[in-house]
Length: 247
Image (tube, rainbow, N blue to C red; front, side):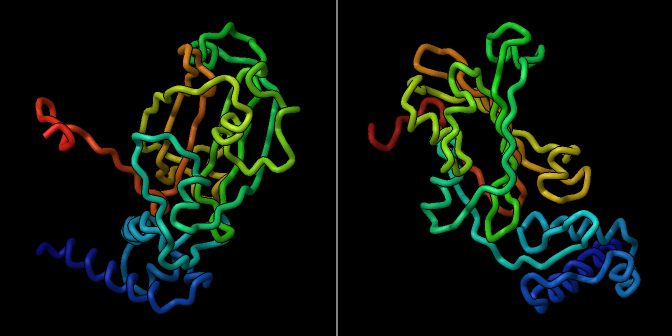
């Protein structure tokens, strides 16, 4: 094992022990203090801290510090079926709530118009909200829809954060499929504010277009997730091999 690797492993073990021995909700020493106490650079410290953050064991709040979260329930779901976070959380007995909610009437820009087969300037409703688990943000969701699909007056007072569940409740239009792109991105200012994290932190992003049964785009959405709280998976069939039910 190289000296660099042994230092990294030692730091990982020491921090793991510190986190395990620190009560949930307690603030850890500052990065300058930890790097000084452990005799390592702040860059190396941050690299290891990101590992624990991705596991959902610690949570960094910009300007406030790093706090111990402790083991958290992970929302584990396949991508074959589209379900709301609320539905997924309910399956594992996890209580999630909606935090900050912002609803705006906007006009379609060039990209939005292209993706939704609309004219630039078409009226849209934009819904931004933060989803919380145990009081901490785990998801930042943005949905953009034509006003004829969903306008502000349709937003019930008991809206819990799921546009998908709201559309299913309304019943029109009849929904069909969602085309989704998955990527890892660096947090930009709006996500930094929503999560209270550092700019440049890594987030999981699902960019989706929801279609109705006639193939018309209904909802353009951007869903940002904090690592450590979600485990997404997909079952893939091997080409040329029959399904077990066909054997």
